[in-house]
Length: 175
Image 1 (cartoon, rainbow, N blue to C red):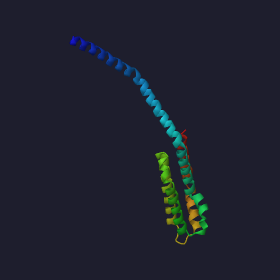
Image 2 (cartoon, rainbow, N blue to C red; image 1 turned 180 degrees about the vertical axis):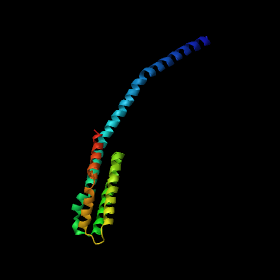
Image 3 (spheres, helix red, strand yellow; image 1 turned 120 degrees about the horizontal axis):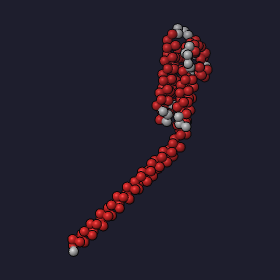
């Protein structure tokens, strides 16, 4: 009698376990789809929150490129009011300050866009330093400005326009 009770309990236990496994097997794809759906919704909500910040960061990179462009900077700084040495120092400080002011934007832009920003900053600094070395000690700020613009005009492609185009292309990938 005890044996027959144990056999009956065993039959019901095995049947229950089989039903449980069948239910899990049937519902697992549904649960996986629900999990994927929630993940997609989370990412969509996250993107909706971060997109404005990312766009603003790209805007600031374009502004950085525009502000460190020597053609714009020389007008803004009034180049003819300084000696070449003073203007050289002022330009280098302006480029560094603009870059430092925008350094946190790298959190929101792609590595490629940030590399473009770093490269244009380094190229601008190198251009100004190299041109300043070629001028005599008594050169005026106007002489330095002309020499910088002459050097820039000899480039086949405007590096500042090219950098801005690369960043704009990166932004189009967001949409």
